[in-house]
Image (cartoon, rainbow, N blue to C red; front, side):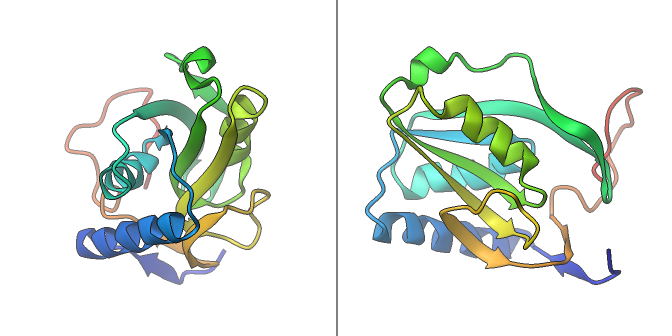
Length: 165
């Protein structure tokens, strides 16, 4: 890992998610559901939902990163896990901030596959080492990303919480 960092600002996030939505629309994909991977994917998912006029927005909590460049061995879904029956025969767009290792996206994509009509992934950033190659990517990078929602320390620190720093 290098010391070089990609810096995403709130303003650039707006541009990035709009351009990402345009890629989805140009491809002709009309998702019935946008499934956000929390926490970082919430921002991308909300913007995509508005831009793609999709009001059916769901969220799945996945724990994986424990710090800069440090992770659990495998990502895990945290309760409450969405009821996959609600996704039956739907076109699902999984939204996240970054496809780094791809393990989180793979977990969520595998959760959907076989139960949905179609599942595709949209991310703001994708890294070369990602095991999941997303259908929709705003930018490719090898660098660590400073996201506007996680560059500052928490206002309060709660014991047992994983920090994004």
